[in-house]
Length: 182
Image 1 (cartoon, rainbow, N blue to C red):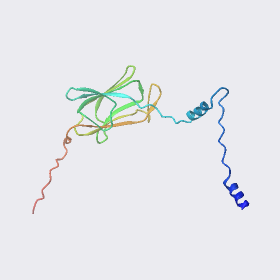
Image 2 (cartoon, one colour; image 1 turned 45 degrees about the horizontal axis):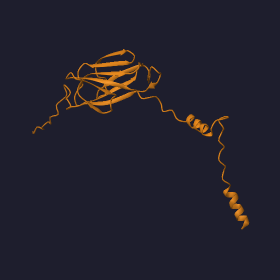
Image 3 (spheres, one colour; image 1 turned 60 degrees about the vertical axis):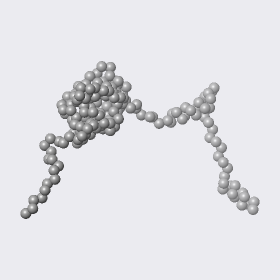
Image 4 (cartoon, rainbow, N blue to C red; image 1 turned 90 degrees about the vertical axis):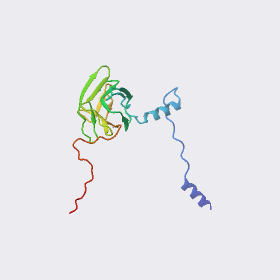
C-alpha cells in the first residue's frame, strides 16, 4: 500500500512554482516591468483609416457634403464629385467605375493646398438606378501614401444612383416575340 501511494505521488508530480518576475531595475515597481512586457508584445493596429469628405454636385444644381462614403449608399443623380483630403497624397489615382466595371468618362482636376482636392466632372450625369464605385488606388504601385508616409491599399466604395433604371441606348427592347403559325 505504501508503494502504491508513493508511486501515485511520483506520477502526479509536484506543482510547478510560479515563474519569477524579472526586476526592471532598482526602485522600479514589479507591475511596471510586467506592463512594459505586455505593451512590447501588443500587436500594431495598423495605419489610421484614410479620412476625407466628398462634395456632390447634383444635376438640379444642388450641392451637399458627406464625411466619407458609406458602402452601398444611394445618392441623387450627380454631375460632379469633389474629394477633400486633410493632407497631400502621393501616387493616388481616383476613378469612378460603372456597373460593368468600366471607367466613367470625366474631366478631372487635382490641386494641393495644405491638403489634397480631387474633382471629377462627369461628361454626362451618372445614370439613375445604376450601381457605381469610387475607386482610390495607387497610380504606379499597389499602394498610395499620405504626407506622414502611411500607406493605403485600394479603396473601393460602391454606391447607387437613386431612381428607375434607364435602358441603354441602342439596346433591344424586351418585348416578347410571337411565334408565327404556318
